[in-house]
Length: 219
Picture 1 (tube, rainbow, N blue to C red):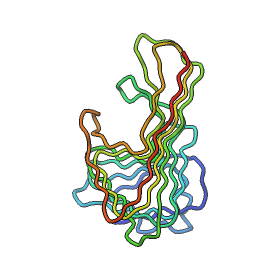
Picture 2 (picture 1 turned 45 degrees about the vertical axis):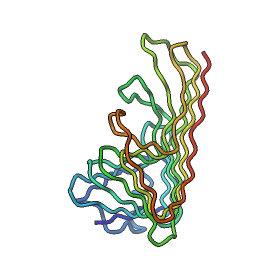
Picture 3 (picture 1 turned 90 degrees about the vertical axis):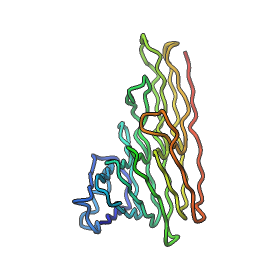
Picture 4 (picture 1 turned 60 degrees about the vertical axis):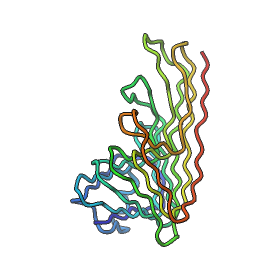
């Protein structure tokens, strides 16, 4: 099945989830409000799930959420139509490794392959990680690092014929000496457990601009 997300507005809201079993063929103007939410796409079936992003604008605002999350461990293809803009949340949360991160613009969780394509050459995607700032952090017995969100994060990424701009979020912290800020990537390809490099393929004239985020620490 394919799902179209279409909107001309940008504002943060709650999470809207689509699975292979309930993804609509089209989101018409009548149900367009759903695309104002941050979006979660789940595919836990063997068959790939194709989702059409058409003029989708999602801003996770002051939250820890990703603008769009892909999960379920199976393959998902995003077809681009029009101008699509994703912005991760500006609040941070722990990733379980004494690191704290802002929301990602687009995060494909698990080991499935995320394919971003533009078969008709009529679309683009801008994915930006959330900027993280905390000027009054308390001390801790453990060293902690704060990151902005990645523009795009995936274990296995294929880009085919698409125009993509990906920017990592900035990190700015002022705190005790055992806390620091660090830059993040426009595009991060890494296994879910952070132990192994992922795979990235760029095909059919894909045009990609990626920029990492800035970091500032004052102790």
